[in-house]
Image 1 (tube, rainbow, N blue to C red):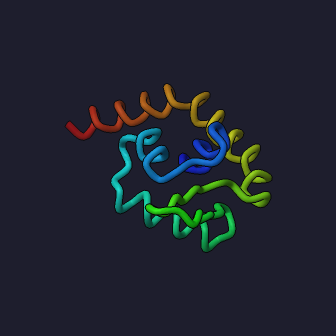
Image 2 (cartoon, rainbow, N blue to C red):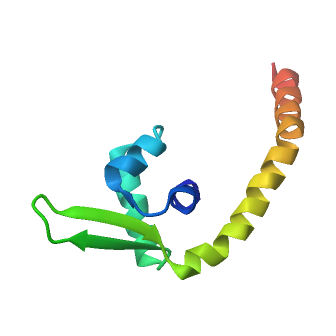
Length: 96
């Protein structure tokens, strides 16, 4: 979801741009996730015939239609984050 939201906010991006925009993701995980998103038809990959080759990633129409659902989930998580953290803290304190 983070990759899709990043592409939605920034438009077409190269791998290094994505990696800088999402600093906590490893190169291996970013590569694997981009491949899976491409296989699922959620991200397109365009290779430009240059030396060195320039590759850009973009959202497909299918993934753009998914963005409102992702935003709803993100908003729910933000609205409930404090209560979830509170419940986790209670559970951890009971186990201590």
